[in-house]
Picture 1 (cartoon, rainbow, N blue to C red):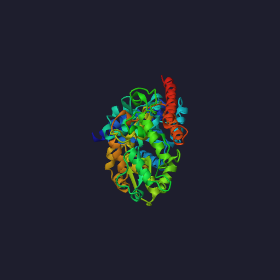
Picture 2 (picture 1 turned 120 degrees about the horizontal axis):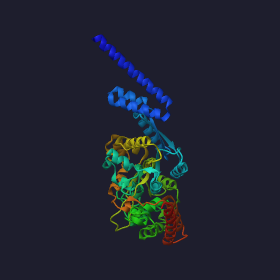
Picture 3 (picture 1 turned 90 degrees about the vertical axis):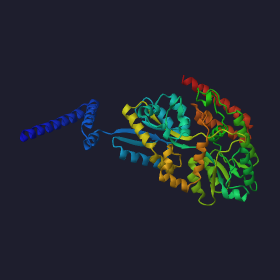
Picture 4 (picture 1 turned 180 degrees about the horizontal axis):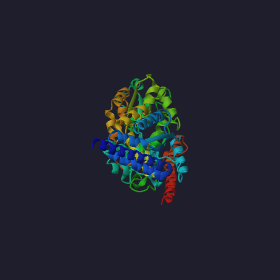
Length: 471
């Protein structure tokens, strides 16, 4: 009986081997259908075998390959490459290739050029002002689909970050690199000017007074770069909407509100300080303003939270860097900041397995461990609340305590359409138009209100043209 049982066992094993070899032959001859048969065989093996047999079956399947287009250079690209490398090592069934596609505008233009072909990405990083275009393009699968299917816990993410990308009742993209603007100031210069170094200006009026006190021998005490993002933020900090239609969130925006009370008040304040030589106008390049601050030539400026480490390191101990909330007009009680940066979109022209693989990668990127490392490496906010419990981020916060200001400001922002951020399909063009208007006003070519009215008319016209194309 023992001998007969052994023979049956040997026969059974032989048949399994023959079937396995047959499956390999079919996979080699049958193209896609063969690959599907091989996958089904592996799935069957995974269901019927345990432990190491499951790993062997999965290893026999070719990994799902996905391409991620991004726009991060320098430290950001290094951090991305590490994220991808670590993911690929821990997820052999999925392999991600990260490809730098130039700055945000360049990457988006390349995406448009790839439509209708298989050359585009599975996953793409798009700046926040490209959100409306991405939705209207019908090129994406909203991440909400995978969130619902996977029962992913959205409460683990920062609500004041996910609010920006939640449009039409769903989260369309997963936030990735996130920042907002804060006030940077020179504590040593504050002391020398008789100002309280632990009490930075909180209002337009206090900022103006401090800038005048910091000015010496006709040299301005502060500088603000001509950056459209700052105008957007100063609107939100007054709880003012930038476009109609509930800031473009309740319905498609048809009109720019740039010349509203909030806009005129902001640009009047800005121009007055420039005219009085309390604030320097160093142009549109934020690097020029950053350099002036780091060199001690000006004692206050506005900049992104993502620039904090770079700013502190550039100062190099020449003086102590302080940070404060973005100022708002006196008497304004509600408001806050809008997140900047970019998010990750899953393209819908790819097979389901690739879209699901992209979602698996997104979940990995959103994990507390990865978000903590990402924040430390780049200076961007972690999108996941639990990232602050990671030791590496705790150590970084101790090294750069100024970052706490950014976190506190994010959490203090009230929830509204204004602070969620404006939504419009022509946002990149609109930002350029706004910068032109600021430039005209600061250079004395137009009065602030007229400059804003002219810019608003241009933006409104472009909104009309855009809306007609997406009907």
